[in-house]
Amino acid sequence: MYNVVGGGAIGALFGWRLSQSDKVLVSIVCRSNYRQVKLHGYSMQSAQFGNQIYRPYRVFQTIEEAAQDASYDYVIVALKALPNLYDSAERISQAVNPQTMIMVFQNGIGIEEPFVKRFPNNPLVSTVSFVSVKQTEHVKHGGFSMLAFGIHNKLERASLLKANDKLEFISQVFIDQGVSSIIEQDIQPYRWQKHILNGSTNPVSVICGGASCQEMVKNDYCRKLLEETMQEIFVLGKKVTGKAFPGTDGIVDPQSATDYIKSIPVPVYTSMLVDSQNKRPMERDVILKNPIMLADKYGVDVPHMKALYAMVTMIEESYSK
Image: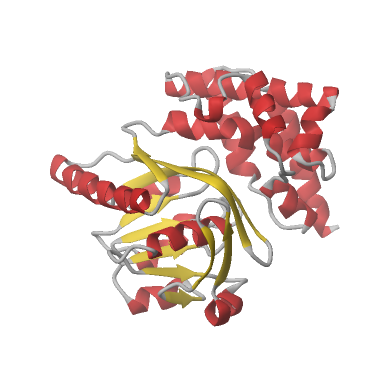
């Protein structure tokens, strides 16, 4: 039995793919869209997988309701990572039993630590998704999906062997349903790889007042800001992990990253921008604050990231004025 906590675009897409297998049952915990999903399911529109109405096996409004319904082999965490507002690990705690594998599908850096602290003996899988998906009245997905998995915490040998088997099982389910999936011993280079775009385009789009990623890279000054921020992420990530990045999507330096953005045929608006426009909390801590703290620890200069964090924080604080 699987439980997806967070019924937004990411949770819906990967819950949908798992549900196509007859080997698993997938429940989803929704909050704001609970009634819509409960009554009508998700309207999935995917260039890769086609269009379908996806009705999860069970839909719950709270994790407490889900915990009362079943014992879960896997809990997939697709909540927004907002540690300044709530503890994601505590939110899922009632659905976690000693055998549960926790799979964290959140963006950002340092997202694993609350789960390690709260569940030291459960296998914790840090998951990095490379996918273009958004939710409006439909869940719209592009033509590609890839997941990179890695067991994050240290486990005793017997527990690790069981965890590896469990992870290989779910990875294969995703592969069988068309999602490219890999398992890495050290997942952090992949997390930093994704952060090259996340940690730059997200905050800069908010500062730019609503620009798409393509509009930003077409502006000489904005592209320069993006590339200099990306360079900070490259340097910091390699310092923290001690490894080169995997080069997913051909992104091996700041220029290749902005070239990649230019190549995307449809306008891309960042999740942080959408949150800002709707005056919702932004994932500023895991996108900016946590990397800045690591930069201070490792002695890496990140002036652009620090400036962006200051401005994004002020913008978010202005919501309540």
